[in-house]
Length: 289
Image (cartoon, rainbow, N blue to C red; front, side, top):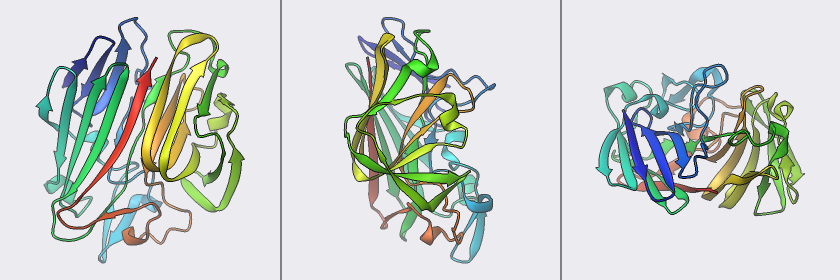
């Protein structure tokens, strides 16, 4: 079911399946979110939980038991309940159930809140541990934006630049896994212009080190664009499907398995831990202009 929130500037459609934003339309008619054309990629802006990326052999072990789970976890393919709905904000909820327990042994509650404030869509991913033992998880977001926007210019006319202009550690992939032995420093004091070829090997991933980061997608061919500010995030990804007319700006609190992973969830790189009856918040804002 599609739910809608709106204000004087933006209208946002969100699917209860996956609590996924499927469209952001400005009152000027600018359509920002990728349309989900299956020729390239059928999704729009999925929520990644309880893992980010791929597991080695799509499986992991925990307390001696082996569990199977596909890329980016199961939340993006599950129906969420709406627990609060107003004109410009909405909250979705997914709870552990018999289906999730087959894939993931923890008693969790995941709340996804969207709120429109002027030209900004604020997203809060709130993870609750409702069990009696420590809970292990990763979480992230995967929003895709149309490139070009409203047909203005070509793909290569668009650039991504960081407000935090400095050098970052870039994590290289032996797709679909991360090779942490090949981390290199990349200077991002200047904008990065998009090309389809830059994504042929997989995503471009930066180590953010639990800090705030703002990235902006824009072009000299249009006055419109998107900026994302993610808070206390560990990793940032930039990705597109092969030759597709979109780009994803992805905040992650977790990452795909290392090529050297031993398959144990407690040893997984980028895993978060919260004690019983505690919670974890992951936040990011999208500013549409």
